[in-house]
Image (cartoon, rainbow, N blue to C red; front, top):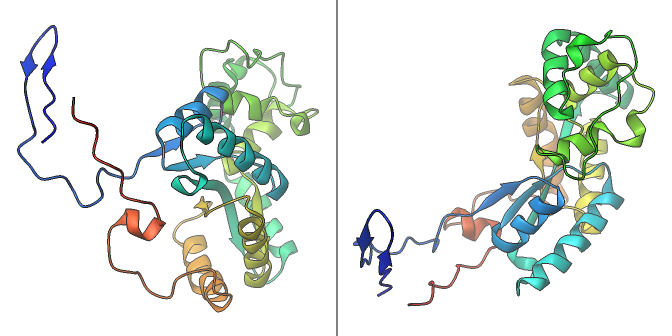
Length: 254
């Protein structure tokens, strides 16, 4: 029995909780946020981590960094699943998929896109000309906000974009990489990330629902199954079991 023996300012309680421990030990802990503080938080506590990385190489470097942080907390790499976000678009060709993405971007209201970009950038951009350059933005270090998103906005590859262009890009993709093409091409890209160690799985961020989700499910999932990369049926057990995560030990009695 794990007696809590809490004595606080407002109440005290001996415990223990009068229900049995759940089959998973505790629910799977998922964390999002790729700043230095976010990574430290994930390494200390999370079992599934949502990250924003631009390509397979960056994913591998990200995983290596997280493995170092996990080790500092006495944790093994297999106790932690890295799920980068991707934006998958399935079409008859890559060019058709890119045309579809370009068309989807035109449907985004500029006011909504600029509002989102402003929240990420920590600056009210609505007061500037939409087709003008992005003004000087806060430095990531010391920024009292979501540093991951600010860093993405300030990324070198966004230099030269107007406020309108950057706002549409951010609003439509969230700066996650676009994986577009035929079902075979999309499966190739996902397999490359997975086999290289740059991802343990993916956070699929579909631009249009339910169409893009259905295209992925009907066309890409069977291709992944043929390659032995995706289950054909769910195994018994809890979510923790299906993720291949060990049941955590009981907290030490005090």
